[in-house]
Image (cartoon, rainbow, N blue to C red; front, side, top):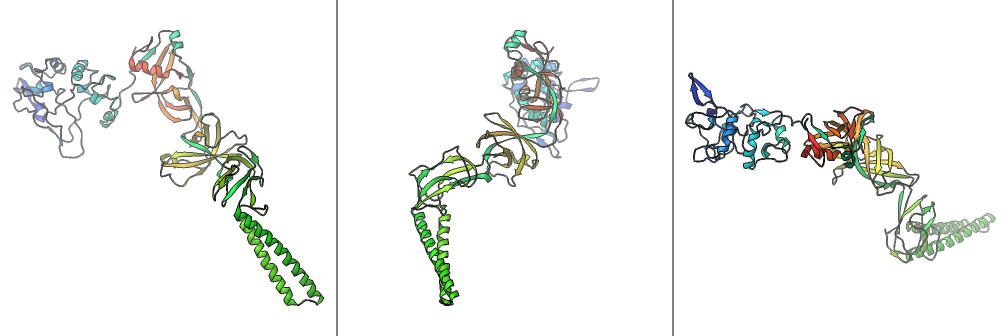
Length: 524
């Protein structure tokens, strides 16, 4: 076992003899204080170890001296690191090894062998408090002990799994083989609210889960506004009303529109007069009474009157007034059949150019706009099947990917994907949030379990299998894809196995804390 503060002893230490027998050197056994962090490097250069430790009055590391800390004697003897001749650890015996030094950093050559490793518990053997429980007191005294897991804090494989992986080893098995959870009685099981289902095999497609929002079909949405300064004279509709194409919605009164209407009326009268004069001159020319010059002059006048009339009409249309109306009053009409989804117009309100008065939408179709993370967007294609669940109502709809954006949103780092959803019943509301599963591959048979049945414990995915009344066994599983409410199990569980759903978290706490309430967890 290795204490929290350790020292790498020079190569000469491991070759030093503590006692000699028949002319043979008795090798010193490496103990917990010899081994420091032994990092293998690809460079041929030596790698410096941590700085020198503090030495006690006996010339050895103060926190490892058996004369200053008599409780450590049993630890070193347990490890076989003991010099009977001088009553100290062989790795610290200065009488047997006069050149042994602890007051300088040790240089470790590249390529040196890695320290011994406890594969069962995934920590260095020299620090394994599971294999050597006597070391626990020493690590607690040094303030280097993880009480949650029972290992030295500095190398706890559950608190620091990255250190295990960096050392090239596997995480420890969890739970220990044979672990089971037993509740005291059927009544305890009932009170705990334990519910089970059977893992089932059914068609499953690899998919990704994303979120999004419903929107009106932007191709069938109209925001009607005033095209100039005006006063709201009359409002003929309200939110929720169904309207037909051409139906008046809001009546406005505008001075500029009134002027254009007057010019249109004057232009119309002038045009009618000019056309009548032209027809009269043409008749007189045919009778030989009028000259051709008079006819051409009448034709020119008619063309000018028509131009004036058309200009006034164009001005009104540009103002959104159309040809109808007088006195500066005109109506804004619906551009297509739809429903009023917003209204800002109010009688007497003065509005300016661009002020939105009414919004009309065709609700027969809505868009689901989904945000797909950029790292997953490359797998999304038009035509892929999508299952959507509306937040709040829980309604489920299905559709197909219609459009995939060509750019990543710089703010969200997501790619927008559009799904067109039929909405004949009007149940889908713009602005509602949705969760969607986009199927990336064709369906296949797979073992599925409810998402709530899977518990993540100390780096492992577990489900609890019911083996009998009040008896449950934690089983490691390997997970695959996910849906909104289920998880694919690709290893560790067969279809038809009875597993815990509601109450799985309680059973997880059982195996973490050994016991909760009337139940218990054991390894038998």
